View 1 (cartoon, one colour):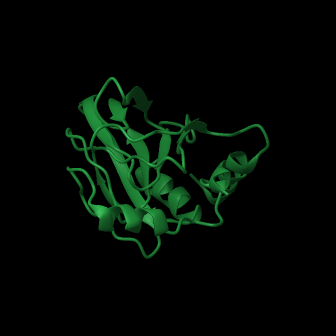
View 2 (cartoon, rainbow, N blue to C red):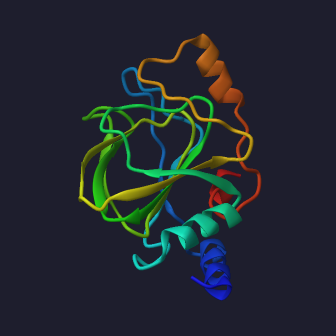
Length: 175
């Protein structure tokens, strides 16, 4: 992906009528989710042939810091100290967002899709293709934790006060 293509992809995110799918999740059992900020799901943001490095550059230009390449854990968890971007670089997977079913939501993601998860959002991989690869990114100055149990009072307060990107193409609907 050259600079012109990156610029076009960023412009497409900002174009009127190009809103992402939005999913507002309520508390589900021990999973806190985030009742104020929705999950944002961008379908086919980039072509599946886009290189991983170019996808990372697009995420970085959107105000997020790519920190790892891997998959999604096969157990329900959330982060209480960071908002997260999952850039689906290769393959496809079935995920559950929001905690266990029936309260959670099962969806399929494919190469080129991107999800923005506000802090507290439960996520878990159900299945994935053998080539499934995710780029994990977080807002600047936020370090992620791994939570697998109900939040205590301190974690609830931390999540309520956690700042989110005030600017940036990926989270413009959070404003």
